[in-house]
Structure formats: structure tokens, C-alpha cells
Length: 110
Image (cartoon, rainbow, N blue to C red; front, side):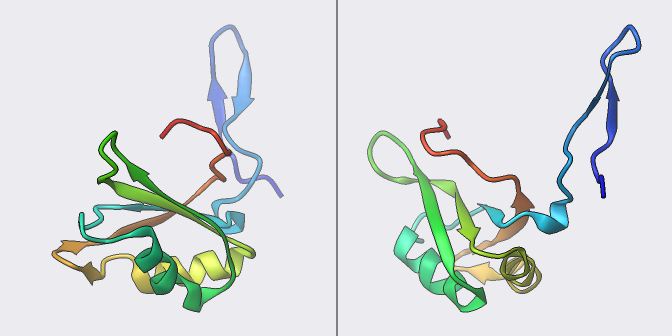
């Protein structure tokens, strides 16, 4: 099954954006995080949906939250349930935005 879209790059060069369906993604992108939310708090909030393999809260040079994070689950269904139940929830003083995303590689600059 292919879910990606064809992208025309010019001169009849066609590339597929993704060969993986978003419904198969195990990673989540979290945005609009309240500055008081820690990585430990995120793990606690999301661990009820399934086993978390990795989490990463983006921080600035001072160690303060940049307002976004990534969480990777062991299975795609856990990620789907987390999006369904956590997207749009008020966490601290902000409404949390949660969406599925391709896996973020270790060492990738965020």
C-alpha cells in the first residue's frame, strides 16, 4: 500500500513524498507546549497510551523549553490513541497540538 503523493520536480521527474502512511507512524510531534511542562511530565501524560521508546523536549541554549517535543511509541496504535485523546487538550495555560510525524533521527538538529 502506498500513501505518498507524487511530486513533479520538473522534466517529468516524479518523486514520492512518502511510502509510509501517516496511520503507520509511531512518532508524535507536540507543539504549543506550556513552558512549565517538562519531559518527565510529557512521559507521564503519554505513557498511558502505550510503551514510549523515546522522548525529546526541544530546549534552547539556556535549557528552557522551546515549546515543542517529539514522542515515539513502540506501536502505531498507541500513537493514534494519543493523538485522539491529547490533541486540543488544555495543558497548563496552553492548548496542546499533537500530530503524527515520521521518526526523528538521533542527532538531528531541532
